Length: 290
Image (cartoon, rainbow, N blue to C red):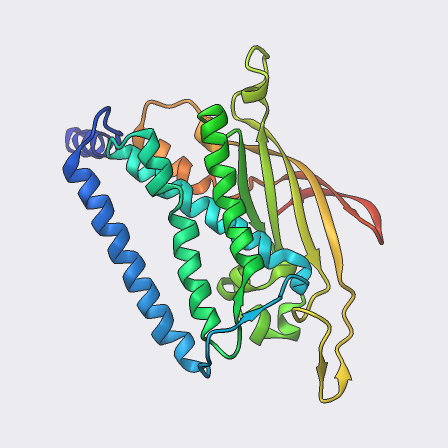
């Protein structure tokens, strides 16, 4: 028991952010982030883009594809990577100014490099709307830190499997792990709003959020496409959601280990009863929604 408590206290001390600049921690963060970014980008180029024909740098307008679900994915990814980048610099005692400049922009910079890769791929192309979506995700984080010095509105993600993936596994994934990333029909992106942060004198629990979600389904391809001169029939429709949520980062605990775990899982929307609205079907109630 003593060994276990000692180990836990050691982990807790390690995870506790410093009040002033800790140079070894800062250097470790910079080296680790740079190494992971480089390795992942080189691996992406060799394992993914190498399988597709290369071309001269070119741009595309893909703003109408997937009912913009892919754009919401860019907003979400840029926000979350930037949040982690800022949190890591906060852990090493870097100033709030430098957290915003060098940490929160990490998602925008990383995804921008991936976009350049797309620009040299014949299969895809550099997308300005993707860049705008990346900028929106970074701006959501930075803007709140400048305005409120906290994240009152967070971006979250939820997923459930659909029957669409088996109809086009090349595009939508084959198996849960692939579909989790590729099947836009089962994805929902949420703006999760913390109530107590806006009404600080109220009795509302500090961890209670309301969440507004966006999803879409009926999509087998990015846009209506023909295969062997036959138009693929798609009943494409947008979905809007309202639900409750939990901001795990606001659960009170002295354990920095638990705070770290809560921060990691706070990217996911907590399942709750949910109201869905579509133009075609009107309102629909889900007893529990993933």
